[in-house]
Image (tube, rainbow, N blue to C red; front, side, top):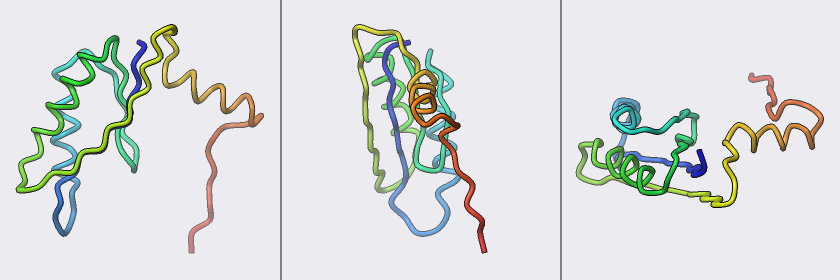
Length: 106
């Protein structure tokens, strides 16, 4: 896969957005993409930018609200098939450890 993106889709409203975000994420299942959701959005990988845009449009349209905010950041590295995981692995090699931290909470 060559196109990696960070997608954030959310209704503009008060209260929990979990069900709306779940609808957006579920819409991705209809496309030939892989994805992983985190607290700030969903990282999506696709073979081509057309598939990526179609999946992102479906996610956006899946949120049934009067107002929807969608942010999309795309890395279309056309000369490489590097995955999102390989990008993280490169950072971890440079760090010499996993790129995660665990803060104690009060």
